[in-house]
Length: 537
Image (cartoon, rainbow, N blue to C red; front, side, top):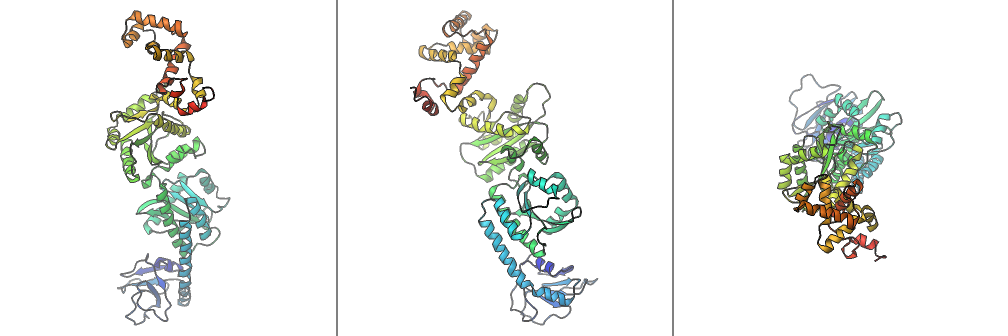
């Protein structure tokens, strides 16, 4: 056990240590009779002024000085600790004699916790096992105040705690209360867990800060409910917290404050939060503004990038966009960026997104230097749409696989119809979306080398302006009008009619999304469509 644990179990009220004493060092208690040979981590208890004369002992000596330390403490011998306590010398000796048994108990409990860690594949499973070993309900929270796991039955009168478990986050009010009471600062300063009293409910909580490689990754908190928490339990809780830190780091859920990405964004993308209200409440805990327009970006490259390098890239992207959150999803960097609030009745977010993303030199340079490209979903204002918008990116990246270095940002709205086409799983689904008059015109052009479909598209692109349409086609106006009339004659499409113009616009974009696939020619169909029409061809 640690020396500070031994002092706590002895109910030492005050102490002062000499040189060579570390309260965090592991010690083994020995009785006053029969001093063991020189073992650096031994600890013994002696009454004031009655230290045995044996130069061979090099362990730590606890010297009992009564109920209080002297007003003036003279030079303390090396590896000595002066201890004061309210109990008598006889009671203190009796408690000290029980420390060897407690040492064996702690060693056994640590082994149980370590075995629980080794056999746990996630944090919740570890929390359940730790709860059984420690005997009280507990919570594991990351640096974003996200509840990673809870175990044990919390009392029904603690509606605040039950709400946290239900919502999946520690509320801002609870965190402010802990900070205001100085509990978190006390834990950080002490370097180990402490017990605090909740005066409102008359309950004692153990608060422990989880750290990994000197990085604060969250908290391991336990409520004293089923069994009394002793100083030895605090040591076990610290050990359990250190094991939880390894799991948190391994699973990459430490949170943005620990440099592992935003837990809030991860939950929003996975649609694991209950509703829009909950999403807004959790987003408020981050640096992101509310009531904004947002977009989601996924960065990808032609080669796999190590996680540590992705985290460095995330830091640079975060510097480029002040209001942003990031997370790692399937070893790809995903960023949510705030684009500012909409100020018009119209939807200006496409233009705003292209300005915000395309004009941030630090962002564009990061893409270029690392051989990355950015897939961007449609902007949105309701957080409940974030998960669906993230799905857009998956579809977009599967369609647009070739990205040029000079245009590394791919916007969904530039490739909408290609994505819609790619979603179709059967020939029947895509067949329903196409106007067969436009299909016939496309097939006719391919067979005869004509340009009727191109003419129809220019008519749609330049409404009411035959001169511009003819110029775009690089033909004389009379040739243009001849083609328009032939389109009506051959394909029954009246390009002055709104419905027919819509049929041309929509169907040609769908055909473009198919990459020029010749419909009804089985040899040129995608494999999924070919299987769906196999019985008819």
